[in-house]
Length: 265
Image (tube, rainbow, N blue to C red; front, side, top):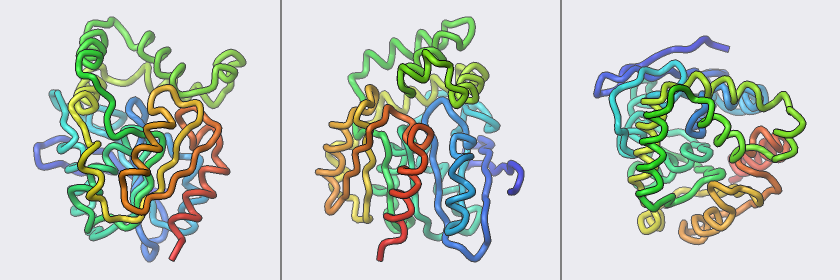
C-alpha cells in the first residue's frame, strides 16, 4: 500500500488521501463517516483491492487533512472529491460513502452523475435537520475543553451497546481518532450536515444505486435509507441488523453486498 499523499483543493485546503491497488483496475472512491479518517476502511482494503483501485481520503478538518476555517458546505465537500479525481486523472469512478460519505455520494449523484459509475449509500440520510439541534451541537463542540464528551456520544451512536459494555477492541481506534479530531474541523463538518437537504433532488440521480441501512441505527435511521431508496429511480435497498458503522460491525456481509452490487452487469 502507498503512504498518505496530499492534494491542494481550489481554496487552498490540503486533503490527505491514499490510492491503493493495481493501476489497471477501475477506481472505487470510499468516503467516511464524520469524525473518522480514511483508516475507517482499513479492514476492507485487502478485499476491495482485488477488484478495484481504491481511493480514500480524509475530509477537510479531519485526520491528516488541513483544518480550514469553517463552516464547510456540502458543495465544498463534494467539490473536494471531484478535484481529487481531477488531480489523479480519474474521469469516472464507483463511489461508496457511509454516513456523511453517503451524503456526499448523494450530492455527487445529483450534481456530477457523469463522474460516477455505481453508487453505494450506506447508513445515511437525505436530511438530518432541524437546524437548531446542529447549532447547539456546533456551539457545544467549540466550547468543550476536549473531545471526551463528543467521543462518548459518537461511540454510543456508532456501535452496539454490548460492544461498549464489553470493551470490544474494535472500538478503540475510533475512540482514539475522535479524541484527536480538531474541534474546529468537526464543527465545520457539522455545519455541512446542518445545512443540507437532498430529499427533493435525489430523484434526479440516474446512477445504479444500492442503499444499505442499519436496522438499529439511531442516527441515520433505517427509515431514512428506505426513503432514499424509494426516491432514487431503480435503487436497491439492503437492511442489515447493525447500528451505524456497518463495515465494522458486519464486515463480511457488508463486503459481500458491496462487491456483488459493483460487479453487476
